[in-house]
Picture 1 (spheres, rainbow, N blue to C red):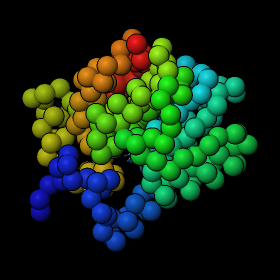
Picture 2: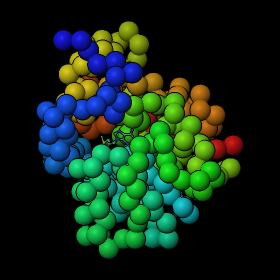
Picture 3: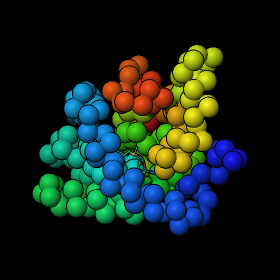
Picture 4: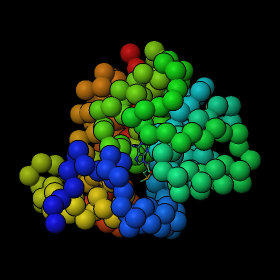
Length: 225
Ligand SMILES: C[S@@+](CC[C@H](N)C(=O)[O-])C[C@H]1O[C@@H](n2cnc3c(N)ncnc32)[C@H](O)[C@@H]1O
């Protein structure tokens, strides 16, 4: 079977009926899949990160809404999510939470928002999955006001030449299909720097996830200069 490439992902190719059905199942399984990871440390990490959000906040690929409870009360929330089954779950979560938030069905590469409208952009476990990493970061920068911040928490490529690097490459095709477009080996820190955002806080960490391919993790803050 031909492995999936950066150019041909579930976001850019028309998904076949099986992949569409799997996408709905994946949305239903997402919270149970992440449950232990969140309990073992990631929820606390999210809370630390999201405490830095302020003003108008645009979240990319908000999924089922794991960050929702961590936002400061006075933040104005715009939660974007392109995948319909995830977006429906996100809307249900927002409704149950009693929190005011706008849910927009939109990909990170093409946000239906004006320039300089956001004080904060949030991306957690999303830049691994977007179809076009550079375009997504260019959009994040476009919507951020000068001085606005990108808060990120992303699993990334292992050290080049390491055993994990070799496994990430070998397993890419399988994992990309299973996790609806996720790349195990994205060089996200380099892409953030390339976008012109200035990283001013960076923590190298490990995600408490059972699948060892989904390490290492970076999280922190980048400023729109
Ligand atoms: C691993 S989930 C992360 C969800 C959530 N951000 C979290 O922290 O739990 C990846 C999310 O990215 C979304 N996604 C996929 N392609 C995207 C794109 N092009 N732009 C924005 N989000 C995308 C998926 O639908 C999914 O909700």
